Length: 143
Image: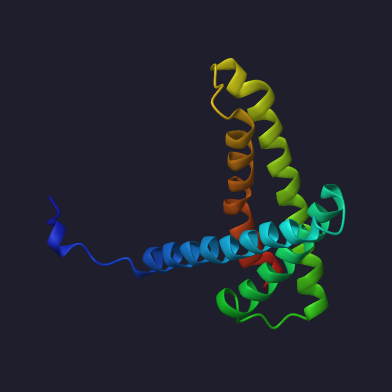
């Protein structure tokens, strides 16, 4: 029987968890940028256009933060990282849309989830790509 005190530390796991937490925090800054930009753009353009431009603003902030703070060891060309970052975000947006719609139209009604169903569905949808995006950005975008 192994003694807990003699169990070796697992620094790789702790580092990965800290890196993922930082990814979520930086992604939160980008999401907040998205929301703030959309709010101000609504004063000069329709909601639909503001959402698209605000999403792009959030992507730019995320790219800069991820590239400079989190995944700063990349030697690949800037154009390659931008293309890959956009690809990952398109995939993430599609995943968020599918999860949001599935939750709102099928899962929540099936379990009588009538307390803010669209907000809950959207939150779960937006949160879902965080996991896949982290690994794709780490091992694909910024490599």
